[in-house]
Amino acid sequence: MIDVEEATRTAEALGLRRKGTAKRRRKNGSSCEDCFFHRNMLCALDLDEPCSTFRPDTPHGLVPPRQPALLLREPAPAAHC
Image 1 (tube, helix red, strand yellow):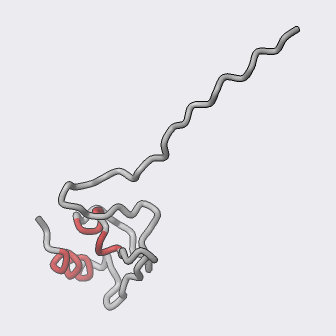
Image 2: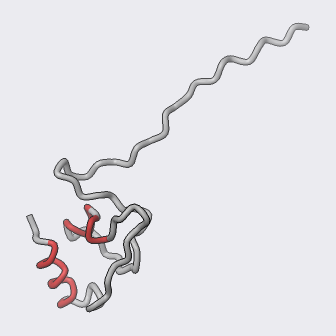
């Protein structure tokens, strides 16, 4: 596993990340440094805040976002002619 601090230093040395820029946190407290893609050196973005593809890095690996439940509609009543 790659150490986040070491990966950040490597990215800065390669010019992939601006030195000294702190990544802003989302309202829920997450930042780019907490992202699965960032921690596994899969992110090529250098943004000031987490992007729309942010996925938390968990011990279980990459976990897809939760999908809304599919609700079935009642069939429309048949028209009487």
